[in-house]
Length: 115
Length: 115
Image 1 (tube, rainbow over the protein chains, first blue to last red):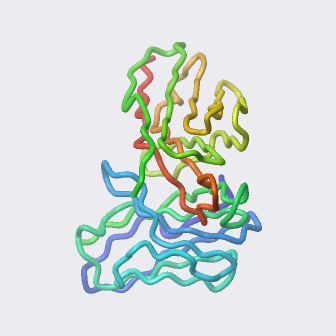
Image 2: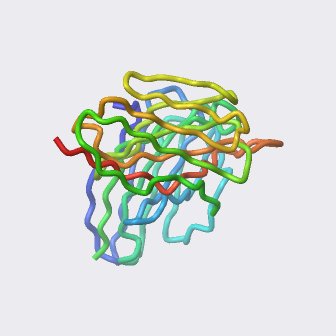
C-alpha cells in the first residue's frame, strides 16, 4: 500500500464510450501525475499537476482529458479512444514538483483495454 | 524522451545469489530513485538517493548514488523468489534546474529467480 489508490483496476471500453479513471492520494502531497505504460515500452509521462495547476501536457491527444479538483484527487477522462490506447495507466504523487519533493509514489494502475 | 542506460536488461539467477544492476547517464541528476514493478501493478519505490556518494540500504537492498552524479547501482543480496519483477532506475532534477516532476527512467531490468 503506497498511499495512492486508483479505480477501477481494470476497464474494458469500446471506442465510442466515455469513461473516467480516478486517482486518490492519502499522502498529503501537492503534485500528481498520469503515466501511460504500454507493453515493452518505458513509462510515458502524460500530465503533471502541481497545486492543482497543470504544469505539463506531454503532447497527449485531446481524447485524454485530465481533471484535478484538489490536491488529493486526479481524474483522467477518456472518450473516443483507439485500440492503441490500451495500456496500464499509472497515477503518481509527490510532495511537490521541484527538488527533493519530486520523489514520486505510484498507484497500482488501471489496466485499460479498448476494443 | 531521454532514457537512462540501465543494465543488464534481464537476469536469471538462483535463489540465494546476489544481484547487481546499474544505470548510467550522460546527464547529471540530483536524485536517483529505484523502483520495483510486479506484473500488472504500479512501480513501488525501493530506495531514494539524494546526495552524490550516498550509500543507502533497505533490508537486503543497497543502492549508491555515483560520485559523478551520472550513475547509480542497486544490489540485492541473498535473492529470494519474491524478488522477481522488473526493476527501474529513475533520475530527477538535472543540474542547473528542476525537472518539474519529470522522471527520466531506465529501460528496466527483468529479474527471474529460480528456487
